[in-house]
Length: 402
Image (cartoon, rainbow, N blue to C red):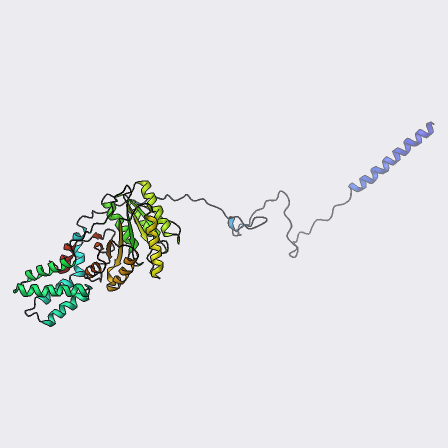
């Protein structure tokens, strides 16, 4: 038995010794030879190992963060948040008073208009007023856009009064011509722009006219006139078919503190007019000014559109004033436009713009005679305060000079 145990122990010892020899031989296996010291230019560059410094060579151009691609996509842009600009409210302007405005602008009007008066005075001062001279007087009046019928009436009265007068001194002729021209302008017309309602609602003024006559600008300038007279004004931008018309009107309103009610471009003009009057009533405004579209493509379309605006507005209150804006430089063509609008809506007053340019002063006489309504306002220039109440006496004095 002891012999068997001893044999087992010896066998275990022998097996352990043999295992140690095998393990020792594995540990002593030689390492592969080191790479040659001379670099191989054809071999790819070695991968960097952990702990190696990733230095950029000093001679390599540095790249910005925008030029470095991130893994999985392009470089994300660096978003720099800028502070929002501070929008300052436009300063409210104080328009100049309207009283006597045409008188103050008379010098400007005289420079462009008194050719008519001077021409007539020169002809009337001739020693012999024969038929040829009277024909020249008639041609002068027609050229000045006075119109055929008013011209014939004026020439007949002048012939009669000159015959009775006998002697014709320059002062007498000026007085004579002034009286006759003033008579043609119908001084008894009521030229007040009606902005006071008889009801407990704002005065409602609708401005109509062909695009290009200065209709929207006139509406803005009229707002200045009313604000200068102490009125609280709301503007209705119902010209939705002309690009930037609402923006233009709103700019005019902001300059004097008048709010503009507007809608989408190409929207329903009647709806905007309705909203403007509604908000004017709610705010307790004194006047609501409604700027309308002036497209003359078809007479029927114009009638339908303006008629609808008028009907819708009058669901709140009746219109107090309908002003027709005419470009004075268009002369007799302006009368054709005036007839069309007069058939569409009841015109109560006329605004003549661009009267300081190449316009002939006689258009004032002709348009009043054509429509039977007074010229209430005149535009005498590009300035914001160049819209003035029409004063017949000041106008005639500008025509004939002093």
